[in-house]
Length: 183
Image 1: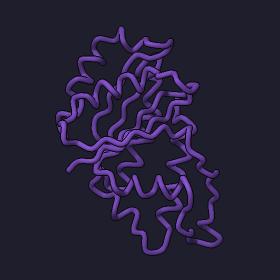
Image 2: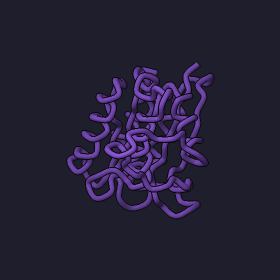
Image 3: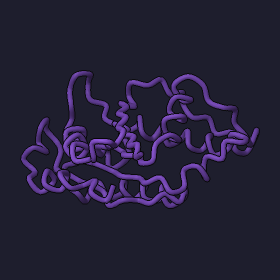
Image 4: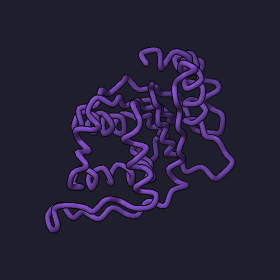
């Protein structure tokens, strides 16, 4: 059975759904009914700052608390969906912190993180003021996928900005309705 892990990178204040999540939820509605969906708002987690031990200790212990929970749900998923608004032409900080922890998970003895990530599909749903400004972030995600031998699916982009702006982007909404058809 497919298990889609939706990683919401928005930092909007609690109770406010942003354009990217709106677009992602519309796309997720098109998944087959038997598809397991897990939604996590990364800003709500207490992920510790990443400490780079590669050139000193060389290995990392098994993570604890929220980092361990994220490792477990990441490995359990068949598909990862980055629900990622564009912040300053780049990756929002909650998702960047999560990705930085991948460097540690690659070096936990016996975990075989890279091998276990290979084949999981990486999807990206993003919104920004214009598509061109999203490209550096999208390129970063593509490179992460390539490094781990994850199929990088064509991203879904919508016009963001002010609250509910994406609801006026009829092209993005139509694309969302069929976005996961390859699933």
